[in-house]
Length: 214
Image (tube, rainbow, N blue to C red; front, side, top):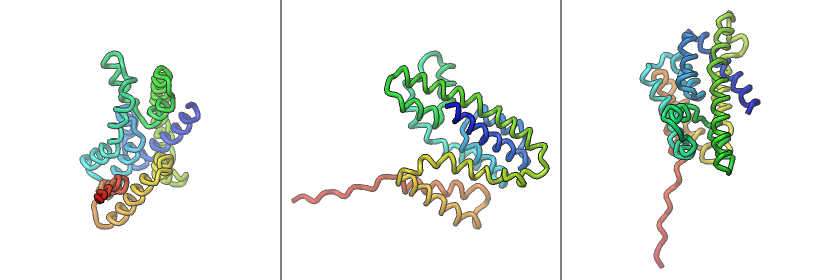
């Protein structure tokens, strides 16, 4: 868990440095880390805002990207007991890592401990690292010289790499990437990302043919 937190700190610092280099206020990207706390959607939002996408398009893209949290909630909802502020914060730290650590345990008490510990540790790491990265990025004349521009797509790729071992996920990513690349020259900035959602169709189960009656 600590090694994962260290890795996420590097990714978050890159996000902060990239954001300020693109003209996005440091307070805004740091606040995103506190209130959104979803790496994929934050990277996408920074990229779309830097490309000139409208706020509506950016928010819609983030909501669609985070739609996976709905089944996450169904899977770990039983771990979020207690008062409503506790449940609210518990749902806020419901990210891929906290859910994965919890589901890897079989004992209910172990599940709850793993979920809360992972979520709190990573939450306390993410936003401060964004702030530090942004402060450092403000003092760099040309962030691109350090390869920070490459950290944006690299960070997104790192987030999805563990899921690419599943064939249906790989098909969805390939179809979505192809759709985005083909529509980038003809659509306004930000919209190709939404077009890429057609890749979800490749992950849907194929309809079973009805068996012929003998």
